[in-house]
Image 1 (cartoon, helix red, strand yellow):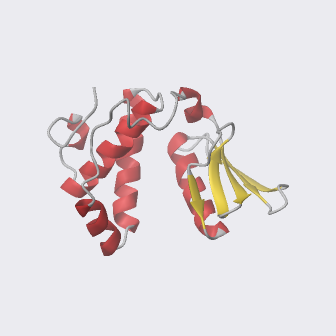
Image 2 (cartoon, one colour):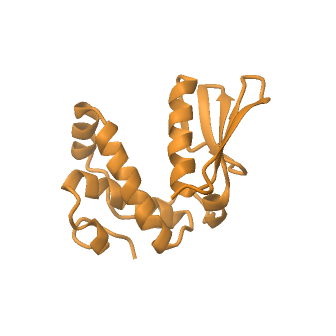
Length: 153
């Protein structure tokens, strides 16, 4: 069952409304991708808090005013269920539009950034939240660096 601002996990009850809305959206998207509720909820909360801490006032206002639905539907589902994505490491790769962050076997990147530093920052966040690894590639595709977050708590 999709969560909304009126019906959400109790662990989100003390979040500020905008952070709660973001956490709900993230959690619903993760469920659409096949994540289990027990893993999606804490990841969504952590990512929503981090988003709120790092978002500009303009980004927060735009998100708040966007009217983005906080419930999912089969029509709005963008991905096939892929629970295995949770176990895969993240990669930062050169992309036609800049630098992409992508799970190991994903068909499409989760994010694309203009510069490599922003892509690395986002890839690191995702890898830490998932407890996997981050592989940073050079522009030619060779591996530049690997970072392991499997033993972090």
